[in-house]
Image (cartoon, rainbow, N blue to C red):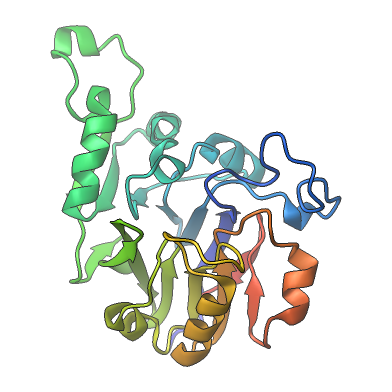
Length: 266
């Protein structure tokens, strides 16, 4: 197996509200620990000069500036909720920098939702008027359970329950090593458990300790990560109920909460 590695950057580790949340003075929201300041979810995986972005939250511009992110060559979207797609418009700057359109990969239902939200991008007005608009140049691509080559990566997605709707668990493979990400899910189905099994890096939804209809609890996530036998386990999509330092102290070896700016190797 190659010793070359891909870099995984946690762009945002927080839930849909971000942390701190508006109008809250709880201990986590007023914490001085920078790891308790959580922008909305996003991961960036890069290797061989290719940047693969997993979800683009409303905080994407801020995240990209903070990380000095040089490229976004392709995007994978897990689902069509606001906290995972509303940064799509900011990709237009990367169109300009790179002089090329950007492929946006997702399962067909996700692409349908994105088309409705971003009609001016995917179904623009006649070209005579459209040339005046500084809009993203994005190419929709269907992603499913069969692996597809995206730059130096092999990528696939399977549907997972997310409350009354569905999201996607995404597998990214580089040089035979596997990253599995399920940022939003409410049940570890047999399909998700199989995808997680033996992952080199597994990143799993763990919103809080109390049950939630659309998300796993921390204990749910930890149990699934331990059962998977993953080499590195991370809990993400964290709410303001959870202090980073307190959560870290009670998680088992090999499993930790993510934090904005964390870097992992694949």
